[in-house]
Length: 495
Ligand code: C2O
Ligand code: CU
Ligand code: CU
Image (cartoon, rainbow, N blue to C red):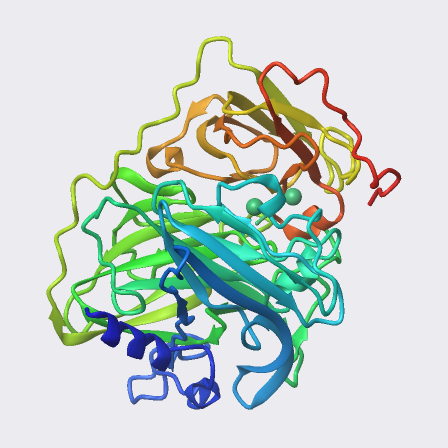
């Protein structure tokens, strides 16, 4: 597709002005003469596609992006507008796009009534650009991080990370995707919004008049909603015009674990995980995704098909309820798609050197790691730049997950069993089921900053906010024992 067609397409499918698209919601199947049981709410609304931001490099060769955090109103349920927050619009944000080697610069303006931050989840970048709780943006203020993209093609995302308030800010609508490309053309469907389709999954609770409901900091897990929005669309439908579609799925929920499956249990191929493409496609009919995780999959549709993607309850705490996510309706005469490539990327598992350092983390309850609640002034771990280490996360209670900023890792195994198939792919976030232990091979970045920490935490946002988070710094190898373990200016700032 040429650039002009691409821009027109994304303009038409942008998040703005979608209220009209929502009419017709709820008019589902099931009223026909055969009276077969129908899905509770017939998905019938065109899936919203977040607009793409892919600016040309300026005279200095830098791609410059503008994000404005703002309060607005969204019609999440038809005819029932509700107060929401978003980037450049009332709910969610644009999809940013860049390539390996690009110099990027973002201006983030905060027009919200309270301080927030923007964290680049999955991006390898200097700690001062990371957008964690140490880089707050005051109300009315702005923040301008810049970095050079240097990592394989991946589906990353951005979201606020303010100390103690992440769950609320994300739940209100602040999140977006940041797609990274590299020099290698994997031969996958790649027309954004056409056959390369983002799916941001977020479960919500609504009041009777359509307002966002629920307290993201209440109970053990915060929000476990009974409606799932996809890219902010309730009861969405995607009209498939090609033989195969690549779906880039983000679990952007506060707590829910999705167990993705098609209603007919058709098989599909996982081609990528959080950190990028797998070496080769892995076939499955069920894909679990915990909060913060991403997966790229390729699905084939026959002409005229109509099939639901669902999440299946497995009786555990975070996967409660069988819910319909989105309906795919295939055209009668699909455009041909490239065959699924046998080889996708040069991904090779992290080689763990003999004698690699092992760090152990224990999760009890939901407000601490290793018994220590998050403290902005405390450096928990000092890691030599470029290190490869084993991180072992032991969960003694109910479901948690585990995310590291900056670093990339692979799951070596859980409870002594090796990670199967795609679970061993490139990752930055991993599900840690109740009463289990996961072992991760972690490769850290090379940019040092002994006084600006990165975070590691449970990505169930209620847990992150209540203190299930720690901090690490990357330092010059050999200086681990000499760097300060307390940050100046933040002493006493405990959660
Ligand atoms: Cu999704 Cu600490 O981040
Ligand atoms: Cu992150
Ligand atoms: Cu947790």
